[in-house]
Length: 187
Image (tube, rainbow, N blue to C red; front, side, top):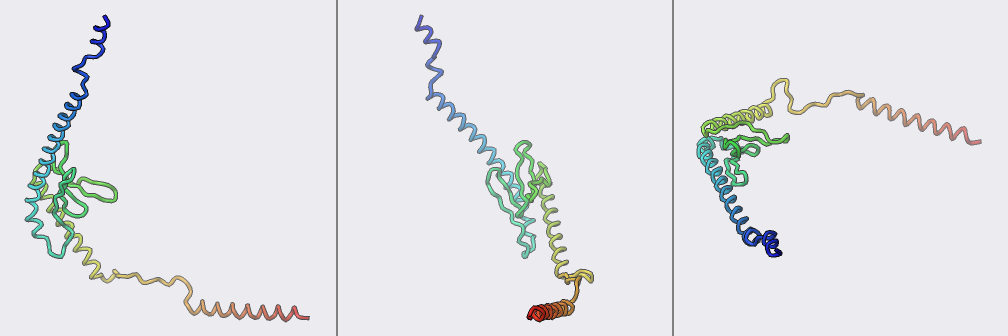
């Protein structure tokens, strides 16, 4: 009777630590393979987008150093357009996400599954940024008749002459008061 209770309480084949470790290693290897395949797919799709954008980046004016087409195989993989914007692949839908980082957090500017749509949107974004910078530089270098490069201080208080005269009058009044106090206190 005791032998049957022991056999029911601990079946030897199902509780082997060695088998459990082997099974856990196989599961992890399978999961890593799926993750690696997914990551390789992301990088391949971003390389395709990069190839489409290289002709656009070749047309950037030489003096404009804001844009830099760089593929970073991080997790998630990112194709950087400039210092603040990049393209990544959405895990759920597999769509391209055109994202901008700002002090308020990340904001998705555009999302599409088609490479041509994303390329067109990025090209339009770059053109808008170039025009915006040209407008800002023109405003700084060529101020209009009403614009002033540096604000002139407004005169809100009394002039220097008034302040200097008040100081001299106060100095003379103080000296006269001191002299009178000494004259009256001497017997």
